[in-house]
Image (cartoon, rainbow, N blue to C red; front, side, top):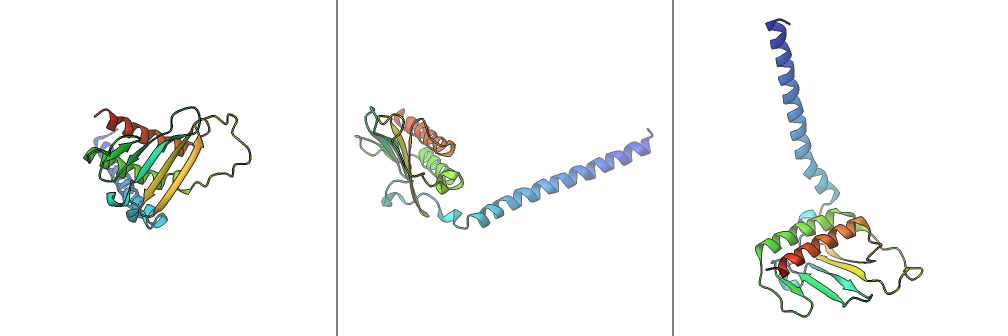
Length: 169
């Protein structure tokens, strides 16, 4: 291969890289626009103000475990069942904002529970629940611990991780 052929090949490669970079940049710019078109109220679907109550409530009920819950406010304060509300924490506030966006974008928000036609396999089984109270509306979901859909389980697990973080402080 001659030096001239090598130079031409390098030129073609650099043009291809520049084109791929422009294409990737265009996709990055277009993605938020497509999300806004799909969810026109996305900016208005943030956690509601702390004076209006908690943004999330997660816990368990029924079964042979003691009923428990944790409330998460937009300012980063939390409250565990039987305890006083904690002081606001910026890290928790950021986590609540991220979880609100996750709840809105995931199937958790659009899921409609199937009608209960018969008791669960084990009627004494614990049920997990999540209540999301955002500016665009409220949603409550309850599922048996062994029959949670993936999106609900993901949100519940993330909320449990934040609750564990608050209890360790």
